[in-house]
Length: 275
Length: 174
Image: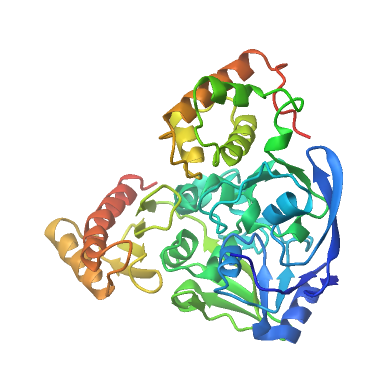
């Protein structure tokens, strides 16, 4: 349970970090808060030759509003985002989901972008990014690009990020008037990885439901404003399409059942808190 | 930019419980091992070593963190506080520690150091904690002896004492 040996580079600015990534490529990993990467290192599921620490880069801890978008930079810790004034009005889904993200003792270190980079299929940040159709801003020495969340998450802990790229920021659209948001998850213990997590966004003409912990990445489906048995049928179809598997934590059947019941509860709550 | 090579040890200097300390660390050395083996501060316990059990929780610049998910080199220049720094003196308990003792909030004591360090930080952030809030904070720690109830009871009482007399010798943050 000790990491294999690695070099440790403290980047003083973004171009130093990008140069190091360009030089070492797949041998390097970015470390920010370390709350996802350190367990991987300790268990030797990841054995990078080089770690590049970005937490000393000035300005990387900024959360800012660009028009109707909230931009969360690579160094923003989860606990810091929770303390943002107006988070509940700007990003009500994040305000609801963040208290479920890890523990009080890990949110103090873990970053929002780090959770996106780790891409655990049951994690809350990827789920919220997909639910709200957010974006990931990637940067390498050669280029910058923006990828929609639905395209960024490719599979279990696999993303569209190239080896020489780092996540510079993730962006979420600000909540629009007339919309409602809700988040719910089921886990063995508050703060553990979710067996199933649901995030709902209701707009004046549609229901969007994203589900984590079932498929190999968070998945979103949009429905018209259904209710009653029509909504049940739509949720049942979604549950089956997610291709749940049995594992140590839960059976596929339980997961499908949670998509139906927790999904319905989440949508109901989102409908009830429309602004 | 500084580049610390894997094969050599590098000097890491930080403040531990108000005292400047330093040690030689390879980049891969965990903060938990640096404290215990490098500095002999064995109050911080090591359980799961992947961030789940909470036994190794320390405070870095006043906020709780898992020492097993932190590298020693990341402590450079930081203010670190461990269970050894909670009491006002080596032979005196903090208000929270004394309340743990009165309420039998520990049995084997393995998880206790981490729980005390977490709750100490939380009580500074939230001097009026609800039972629900405390249950969520303590939920970041595994305790197999107490069933948690005496821990919550002890913490509620300590919070009340600290509110009624802020001059009590609790955990002046250093």
